[in-house]
Amino acid sequence: MTRSVSQVEQYEKCPHQYELQRLKRVKPRPAAWSHQGTAFHAAAEMYEEGGRKLTADQVTELFRDDYARLVNESLAEESNLDNWMTAGTDGQSDIEARYVLGMEQTRAYVQWAGEHEPAIWKDPAGKPGIETHLTADIGGVTVQGYVDQLVERPDGSVRVRDLKTGSTKSKFQLQTYGVLARKVLGVEVNDADWYMAKTGGLSRPVDLTSVTEADVADRFVKMDQGVKAGNFPARPGFHCRFCDVSHACSFRRG
Ligand code: SF4
Image (cartoon, rainbow, N blue to C red; front, side, top):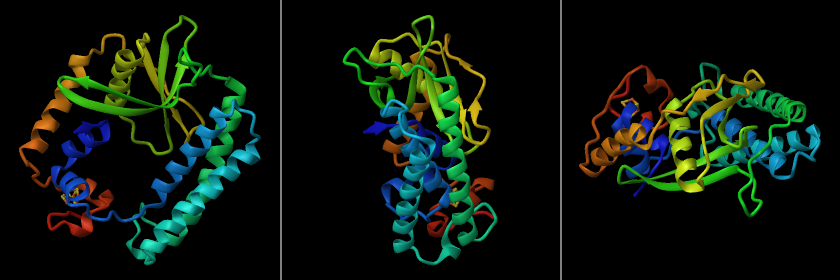
């Protein structure tokens, strides 16, 4: 059983949602914001892996193609746009608005990376720290994470960077990735930050110097034990509005 930050955060928010989505395999309702985030990440990843040689037009084309593919795949499975999740608007308008937004955010990322030229860390074999898959034992639980970027600092340490298209930020995610990077790669990690696509710049750095494996282990252990015990109570609340399996839940609120 490999655990992740998203599993922990979902289980803590609503164990029943975890059960419906991950164990009962309820088909989640599509959301254009999810495709926007996925396509943005894929475009930024290809731009960085290619050594920032692509033009902004080429990178936005990558976003456009991936976004269209993802939206079309979801439409093939759920053609009724009333069943898509949106933040208040109708499904069709949301798909169109997020296409425009994603194109702008992708172009802004290329501009920002070209101006600031963050130094991507490379492993001894020369592999760049882009979308790095890390797995390690934390508190007796196997934990994995995909780190968007590992950035080399002037003092030789490595900074964990997460790219965000939404506004929800998770310090726990950065802390876990910092611990994983130290354990798996043997690098010094003192801080982390987010690239915020909404603002086109970096957040303030999050200090990780005093964050240890023991600090993050507790939440993984509790979640792991809860799942193994079959403990999946519903915790309805405001977050039910953004629950993609709410159509299969009899406890939903709002
Ligand atoms: S609708 Fe609410 S209570 Fe039901 S699974 Fe989703 S988050 Fe949990």
